[in-house]
Length: 216
Image 1 (cartoon, rainbow, N blue to C red):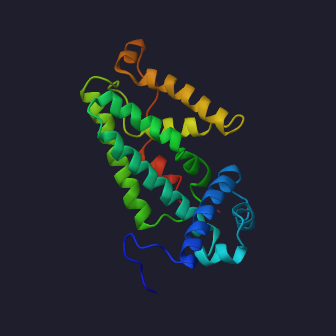
Image 2: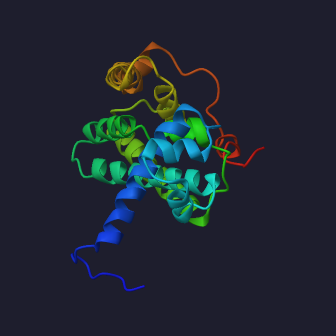
């Protein structure tokens, strides 16, 4: 197959394939986040494509879920890289958390972890995502903006708590997540440490990673 040069318009067939793929992924996210047990046929119906067109691109439900989670990791990395460009450490950290929550990346983690076998690409992106988040946290702590008793593994729990908010329509969900992110941010500020230390121990890397071991 001839690969078009950068900037070269896609042919009609290729353009249709790109549109189909975008529709499939958008539909799969909506369908599987709402109901991880839903069949692939529900995705094809929601996307408005034939089941054969879906299977040509994604030969199994697992392959489709794996692609969704890879997209989520790519989006997380993009948000984190952009946040690191801010000069102010608190602004950078806040922009990162708001960007991750608005992108709703962790609804995929909450609903789809354990439903596919992560590939080396997933693992590499996950490592990069963790390193970027750690840099943002460390920079804010070193500047005295974020409480010192917060550790890297606390952050995924914050994302996932907010991703679990699902009341009303999409607009209401976004509004509520931003409200409770404001509460989380207030608790993350260094000044909040004066009201007491954090209870319990943060999750270990093994505990976080265990969720991605395929089950069923």
